[in-house]
Image (cartoon, rainbow, N blue to C red; front, side, top):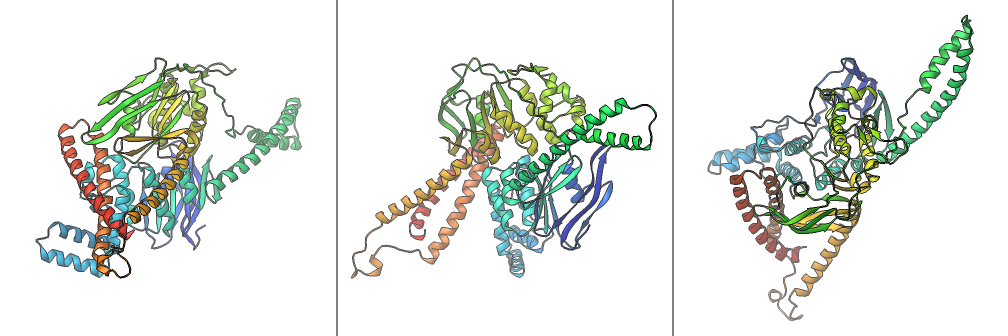
Length: 634
């Protein structure tokens, strides 16, 4: 199967764990410049396949062939980094002479008294023409939220370490980039930047992601692994949905035809005498083939569930002048809102601004600084947190769920909904319900945790990043469930598609302590925000022109007229100001996130508060100077 234009060829590959076959006879190729996504259910071996392609595992059968001399980089779901290295050292730890020159130069800057070392480092930068590359490195790190690049890896959270690993594989500029859930732990702004980055770069890409807008914008091909069979769909996510629907319709027609024939053949088999000739034997063999085809499960038996939850009363959830700060950082500064029945609210904002803190305040995991939260007597909250649930590894899936409840009350005609039926609805079918928890994949465990929350029969769901590690099929099931869920929903998610499909309106964290209530979904908010930004820019430019001093007339000397353009030195100053402002804002966001993560460390909070105060003061000064210069240079 290997072809000259392929960077990678996978030839009849198989992988098994004990008696379980993940996949077999798997064959596909990746052409140069192709951007491919792999879609499959959790537990079917997506991560195992990527690990094999990256050389971390070997197939039981078949072979994996790379074009000679190509450079491959792999981003796993849980990268293993060197905890003793700094962010910059880790990111530049790639086989590239440019990175060595940059590291040498950065270390020389830390020791300015060593002029000889600085001169050697400067010459190495010149020799390799590494100045532009250094800017690319810092820009990539900045986009992913890192400006203090001398931090040690062991001081970072798991999500931050995933972003460091992502920066490293992007900066290494490979011929083939393999990414396993690259959008996990990125906020929406970072995801949109990564989306544009991958579109602009001339690289070959293979990734697993559940972000459907990302699939729509980035992918040129989608590989679908279903029932140990691989289907190739040219085009993006929309094209994939069309082709999958066409295939399933054709399969359904074939199954219906097989079932009709099966009924006739079954009648014939029952009427047959014991002695059978050659023709009869052929017909019997054909009958068994028809039986197998007719009994195929197309996965379309949609279990209609109308949950009968505890009815919400007149008072649901009220937030009155709620205030919360970590040191100098304001999370909520007098937020007030009253929930109405059936509302579905999305919460939007960069990492570290306090989205999860708002949920923890409502659920009583964090204490208020001021104001009050009033919960109605009839409200039963179901909370799904980022940390997940710690299961007993030796427990079976069905027992995990029945420990919460054996049945859910239903409004439907078929009676109450059993734990087994709920498991089926969330794609734990047949024997898998009796699988031990230790044998589940990470995504399957997240799905099981979600199900335990739903089995408690809440009428107010609070979901913190529920889409992480879930496959697209599970996301569709969850979306369908939540759209028909009669209670209230609050959700923090970086999945733009999920938010657009589900939410009625948004709480947008717009600044220190401020939340905007926006009536619409995320895409509508982005359009509105872009229009508002354009209007504000026009207004500012108009205001700047109206305030500019008028010329004394044609006879006036040039040096007495208004300033109309920047000097060269001022242009450089403006560029430096923009870079410094971006760094200050990013550091401010990092401190905000640290406030949340280290809320119990009083000494650390005091240090961070002092740094936050200094940053806020410098931001104000730099912004004033930037406004002054940008009036003439914008």
